[in-house]
Length: 376
Ligand SMILES: [Zn+2]
Ligand SMILES: [Zn+2]
Image (cartoon, rainbow, N blue to C red):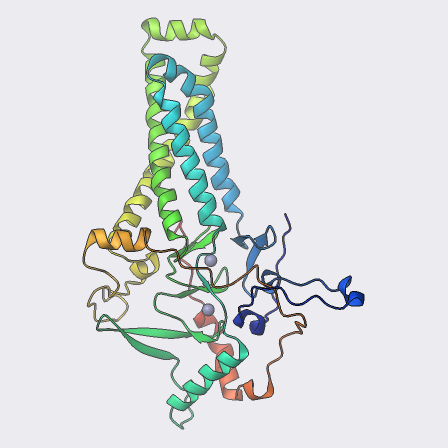
């Protein structure tokens, strides 16, 4: 696994999708020059693994903790609870637990390793074109021209903000994640627990992950409680159990049972609450970002005329969010860079007027929308 981070921007290379490798260089150069892939010059703050196949946020340190908690708790359950429960209740328990566990791990990894819907930054030509449009729309006064656009969505006016990092007007529902430094389509939030942004392309995996995790946690919690109650009921149950394995059960009740109970007890309520909250969001076709900012409820100064993306039907909203066609990744991270990828220098006609550059610097911070964390 190779880990590379690059901050060098090569917008020209990103703006031209070119999945075919460039023609091989002459024999003399072939040994020294290797065709670079686009992830190696990716401008955002992401980590790439497996030659660009896997994408993660730079601060993905909490992901091993999430994975570790799931593995340890499930491992203790399978090793210490399952044999007892199979013997005294039913053999379905490890099967149900196993299916839930596999589903949880797969959806977690899919959420973490999938491109959340990153928008490629505008190339120099595209950026210059947008700048020209803004200049033409502004008056000849000293004030910089407006950096917002208004469009109609389902007869409702939606404001598009200009992103000074990506040099473009953000499409509807797109937000710039300050941690990953990318504009993400249908940005929900940046989740440190999964080590990635949650957006248009991985929200369905994220939702499946938290819902299945709440089932798994509740299931393990129920099984561990049942196990401990059966052991402590006294009579034949605990005596038989202790006779069968005199060393294992006292050790189990003292340590593993309490570890599992504590982890499950504290996580089950927060995960159930999070699942409930996201079920409400899915049913109303909202994102966490929109809900917190109150984009459609009048909190942010809008008229509060309702969410223009909602289909006014819970079932249709759920289908649209969770079962709609999977949009393709737009960053083409495995594509090849053009052979002579010189450092990006803006052509003369692209250079911005001094005022624009200044406002760009001032607005840079404003552009960075705060990332809503899972914990928050
Ligand atoms: Zn942006
Ligand atoms: Zn992010």
